Length: 188
Image (tube, rainbow, N blue to C red; front, side, top):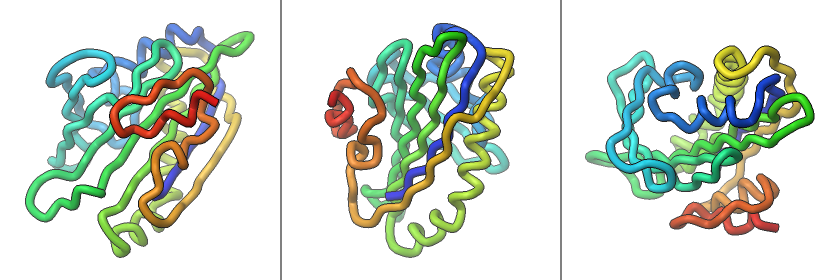
């Protein structure tokens, strides 16, 4: 498992930031690597969406696995098609917390590679993922707020088939477990 996260302070209300991050159609305007996104079905927890990657024709179906307005949204993309391995997946989380004069925004990407080779390649790309998350926070700020101030950086790589809960322990109080997202430890 590979985890990359970045945090920033957005000088905007938590509601204004939530309005941007929870809408699938807004993803291309702020999230790096997304050319287009569309809702396939549902809303909130369980919503299915298709995300089209920038620079290539690839698209992935994603399902919202945690949805707690206005503080936490997370979705999971799984590899599909010929040769795809079931354990290969990516999860993206956006955690917001209200601050005295704005909102703290935390972006987290957790990837479980399909094997040792893809894991090694993903680890080589961790700096780029971090830079992409920083760019995403800057774009989010321009859409929802007026100022960006970095508040934290984190990068980690684990081995084995760790759970999201292992990777995300301490993400925030009050998170609810949904499906096999493994977010039960967040309620500490």
